[in-house]
Length: 211
Ligand code: PRP
Image (cartoon, rainbow, N blue to C red; front, side, top):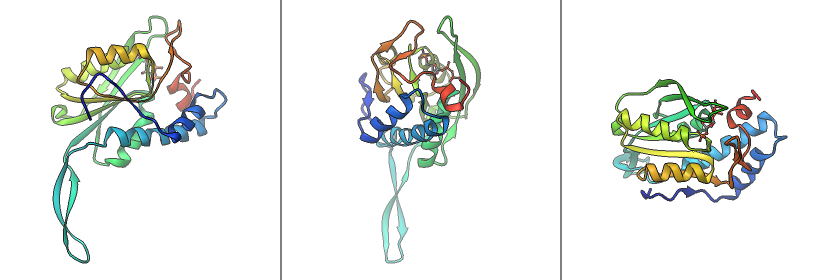
């Protein structure tokens, strides 16, 4: 993945169709989860597409040949709660990935992130750290999360979001030029409540059925 300020915006017909399902306010929890899972798989595919490999020798039933293993420790860090919706798709590709949890919610009045929990695996410095949160709005949560991960030793971080606002993208790409951003959509703007427009509402509430 090239290190640049420019986000990777995933263009794919399945993503376009599933984003529409997620945006539609009448979509039921079950359909919302299924669409989220499919998009998460595509985001994970792109986020992992340049993983380093090491060669190994394997014996097929016919002969000996060269094969490959993933030569990279991976840590997935969901920003709770909504980030949990993107974890399983990555684990499907890399079942030995470790998961560090970062609990944060956005204060509804100030729109500032409030930290309430963290539990990280060791050796963050040796891992590719995939920070996941479906919504990048003001960028306050992602900013705090990346700052926390870097202070915890992480040197190789990628941020994966589903829908990004231009404000959040600008904040993260300017402050962290070495953190590639992978997203499925860049929406128009934030409204007065710092919700993404058009967006999909509150991803955590819709995914967990708490709204
Ligand atoms: C949402 C979202 C991000 C954050 C984005 O979380 O999942 O974590 O807000 O906003 P920001 O870019 O302006 O910081 P929320 O506070 O709704 O918590 P939840 O995941 O528990 O629903």
